Image (cartoon, rainbow, N blue to C red; front, side, top):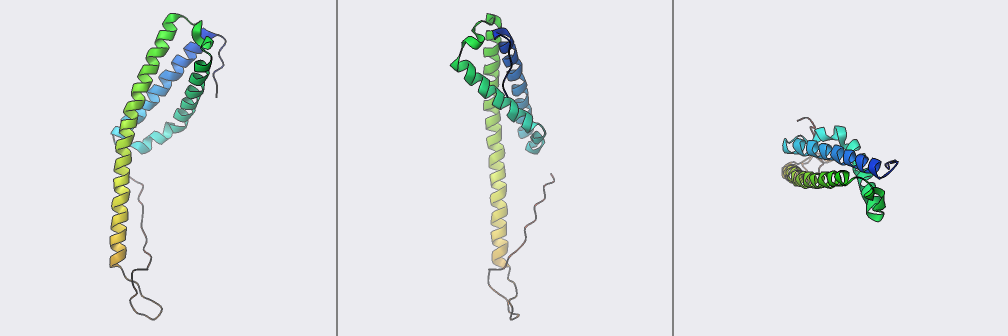
Length: 147
């Protein structure tokens, strides 16, 4: 998705709004990560990804052709620069929070895998001859997605 700006002022104003909306979603996601509710961020993930893609494409276009915003008022360009700095900080905070969630998730997965391996080594099944077999029997693992 690309911005459809009529002139430099229009493009700068649209970029400011895009940057603010993207930053708000990133901050909201970070707050959910810190509250240990990352699953709730799924409700706006598609919008965030669409805005991020648009932002990336538009910033690349402006970097290639600065004339796209050079004629915008200095105040608008300053506001866009400030909003970009705020977005960058929000992304850094989000990356830190996502790292914590990732570590917690990995620890949980490792704990489940370890428990499954210990359970598997203790369990024995019965073979076709009615005798207890070795450790090659399958066991079931249940995943509860409710918090």
